[in-house]
Image 1: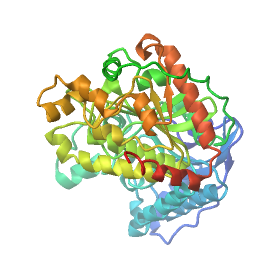
Image 2: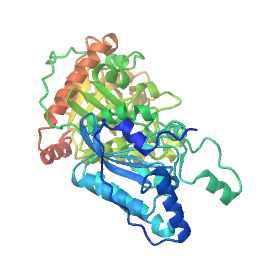
Image 3: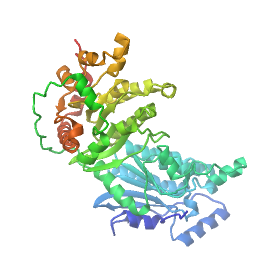
Image 4: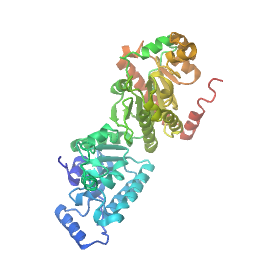
Length: 496
């Protein structure tokens, strides 16, 4: 495939015209053999560059950013000691100046001519990137063709958001090395950007010509002012009508009821989808994104009713993906919105062996202790541990016909009465309705449906969006320590 634009061309595509300013200092070369010195001199003469990476700053949509970009035509973009020095200096400067950092590697990996000294530089670069992220600054990665070896296994795999060039070869061990070591070709189609996307390892496949637009949208969310004054949503019409619990459950199961995708379509002003856990899993039952509701920016993770079927129920991978969203909210100091809409977590051999119970527990622990503001939306069905895993928020909002229960009513009936005929009766007795949850203090606010979200999908979603915007705006002004303390105390007196 075509290698795509070089370092200078990519900077021209990504940055506002005339804004790039180089941070590079002349490289200090390590001691080297004469043959390597000749290679280095030839690379410098041929490319007009002094090393395999360019670093500096520029602007995207008028917003100042730091950049570090590889050049493959310079010794295959390989990283030696001098190139590592440059990357570390740029990362540390971006951290000190509070700038988002954009990385665009393209590389065969560590520079073999410098041996182990070059190899261990990956640890230095990784430490600098980790410190940048720990300081709460965005780190965005664009993987180009090809990106392999130590570069992919260090600063190429640490992005808050990671996208890749279409068709790019991306992998840990280069195919030529694999064939030389093992005497056979590496399986075709594995080390491709598209296969990484299919396995939840990158967030998107993006043409170089579109990368500036995507980065601008990401930065609009990640670098926005967290404090804003939200206009109050229209007041709910209270009291809500006394709809029977079984009627609400029946309505929540309508196939045309709006889920997270229609909510975002109608109510969000911008959505930047993310993909998978970043660790080799993606689950169609969970949607993870950066989203903007007016001035309110957030990490948004929601159970997707469209992706959950009898064949693909909500599995442990979905909760690992949700926990990635929680980590992003913590690292980037962004509020988190979780959306509950599930008929229940998977009950299967694969789910058990995949650690479903442990993932529910870890999701609960992570969400409960998350320092970022959190808003939970109970949108539809809320069955069992899969629902509970996303419940503990600073504010919990419920759609009128949403519900929350330890089992579907049919399952509870099977336990208590050894049949499913008593499901409506048990639903009434268990207090699963939104109005019951409001009275018990489990939810803080109910969004009405007139009379059913499925009958007014756009109006309902816009109503929910206004409530989310208002709740996120209010939380932005609360003291973080007090907010966390209140969350931890939330369910202490329940049931007494």
